[in-house]
Image (cartoon, rainbow, N blue to C red):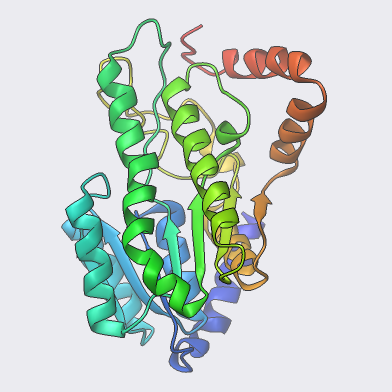
Length: 287
């Protein structure tokens, strides 16, 4: 609770910065809740023009109103990142209104929780369409403008993109694919000034677990974890914002997350056992 209160104080203190303006534009996909919404606010408070995409028109309207109240020029667009046409229109609308793209944050995502043996293959396909192809589509259409501005591409990944998580085969696959794509993109453009950040928040208080798909493709509705004990979305957004400014390659948050990555690299077999034990302890675990 202390962390959230201190962040709110910081939020109020920074509000006046929104009127200064940087002349730069950020696109945040999946920006109507959780980390995405917090990112929209964090960049807004630093003076960026903010473009937010999402599928829920009511939530988009609410975010736009919030940004209006702090005097930030914004554009909120209904779009589904798994649809390439929507991604192209998102970027085109951004450029038409603000003339440039400086930061693209591929945040839109969905999770799943089921054993591979039990679930319908359509679950993995849907997760891949949003998490991986959404990143590919948005980045493809934004890339010419990002190269022109020597801007930043951000992929909001997960520890699941570095260590395969049991019961999350589709989710891990999508995040591994995202990371491989972004790493290759970084290397391809190493001489062109493009900044690529892969951010792994670790467990964060958000709706991603309540909307996670079960074996039949339906949302599981309840989180298997105590959301109050996790990092807040605002803390994650602040860390990602600072990583963009410093043009970091990788960002792994929480001590638990950094330990998991370290353990997986040095002691992979032991890591598998520890991860299985940890994930099996979740309430309602499929194991």
